[in-house]
Length: 78
Image (cartoon, rainbow, N blue to C red; front, side):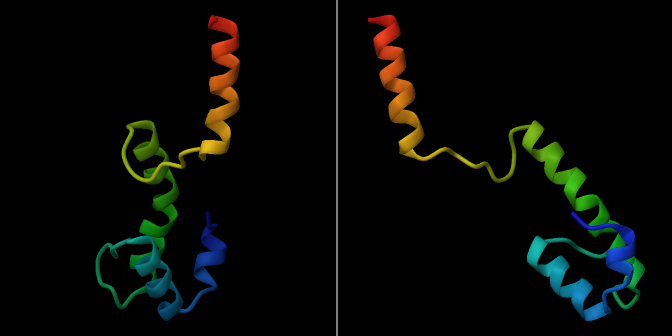
C-alpha cells in the first residue's frame, strides 16, 4: 500500500488520519511518527492474512456475474 519512504514523508497529522481511516492503532507513543508508520506498513499484510482466513471485507460479484454462470451450468448439466 505504502512504502516506508512515502510514509516518512507524511506529517504526523497525515499519518494519524490515514491510520484512523484504516482502523490502525499506533504502537507506542502516538506523538512519534514511527509509532504510526510501523502498523501502517503492516496493514497490507494483515489484510491479506484476514482474506486468506476468511475474515474481513470480501468483494462479492454482482448478480450480473451469477446469471451467465448459472445459465452455463444449467446448459451443461441439463
